Image (tube, rainbow, N blue to C red; front, side, top):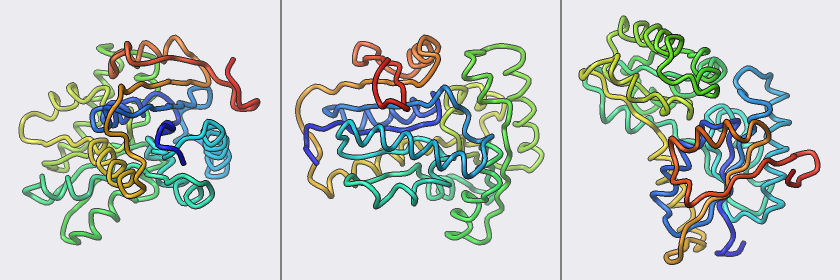
Length: 270
């Protein structure tokens, strides 16, 4: 591993851009190589076997770019694929933080909500992580099937997205939660709208900041962190490049980014 090598960031689509934003703030001197598999997103609707195969495609491509660390900026991949990747490549792998510690620090009534994909909800990964630290906490997980397609389509402010947010917020409001984890990396794109619908009595938590901290500590442990120089990011998508750039503009400083469409099958750039 070379200190000058890029940090790889993997996601099923554009949601990981919210994690990339946190990483760039934490690592201002680093080069990043982001890959969003927009041609096959969202991963949450695929089978376990399909997800494993797609994760392998992404990781092999990034390995070919000589990355020095891999951050998996996707909760679905983290839940299913992190352990399959870890130890198979020369670089360290950091998965999405479940945000359990942050949620426990924020809750006062010990009733925590989780917004996630149906797949992530089905694994009960966040519930287990939280209750492993405090078994008295009640966790209410809500699959938000409508969010990702609307966000990927750029339907911000649309009646459809507003209705979807209200639908899912109302379900957790009825559970009297006082803390909600955004356990899909797409959801911070609409964090402000979610916060508005919940109101001031509910704390919304994005685990991306904890993930960036985990990545920083890991990079320090290997001695590969850069402490000087100008940071930069190459953002790659497997499909819908222009739509990806539009969504990236909501999260990133485009002056520090290049954009490419890649072909995973040939491991090259179109």
